[in-house]
Amino acid sequence: MVGDSWTHKIARVCILPLVNTPITPNHLTTTRLISGIVACACFAVGERSWDIWGGWLWLFSAFLDRADGELARVSGKTSPWGHKFDMGCDVAVTSLFFLGAGIGLRHSFLGDWAIFMGVMAALGVFVAEIFAEYIDQMNKDTGEKAYSGFAGFDFDDVLYLFAPVVWLGWQMPFVVGASVGAPAFALMTWYKLQKRRRQEVAGTETS
Image (cartoon, rainbow, N blue to C red):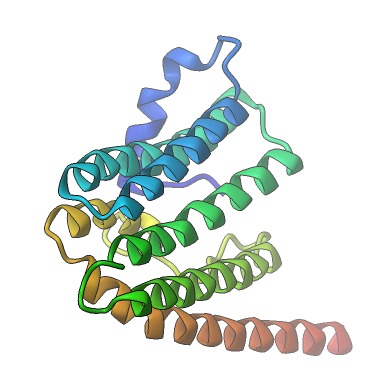
């Protein structure tokens, strides 16, 4: 399904000069992965200057997450493998954000608990995104998403807010909240997946 959020529209314009070049969507996805990992490594340092640079890299990586898909669609270079590669990078980078932020908080009063919370948040995000992808694939004929957006924004546009969170020094409440919220969100997404599977089985039995 073609994305129609504001960020998709902006990315669609930005990738037009790349359509007839040797640059492929997978090139952008790889750059997104590398820049995202470097951003998370910056957050793990736990110093203000590194957080600033990490935030900019994070925004760049998040935008490439939109750009690679738009380049694939506009240039006609979509492929099942490319989709899986893109999905894997998205899950990895988003999960690593919380791990990096948790490690960066190790010198706070939370101590090593910050790392544990970062791990819990990362695992919760990882599992939730995998479950959500299963739901999206089951709904590919209708284009319905596991979690829909609103007002021209996709659900995962929230990733753009992660950089301001770091710049404002709000990592601690963010990681602490996510250490509980992300596993709970994963559980909720699992429940939605099971419900969707039951609907599919019921539809097969009645057809």
